[in-house]
Image (cartoon, rainbow, N blue to C red; front, side, top):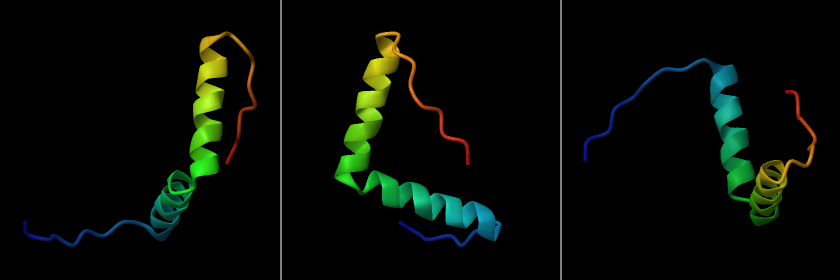
Length: 50
């Protein structure tokens, strides 16, 4: 597999780093799953604004 370098804005890069950090945290992943299940059951959940 060959590697390719791409350029993205710093703000986008930092956002991706934050997402990866969240997804590596098992407690956060579980909280996301619980929120998704609650939404499916019609329960109103918190909406995060970044």
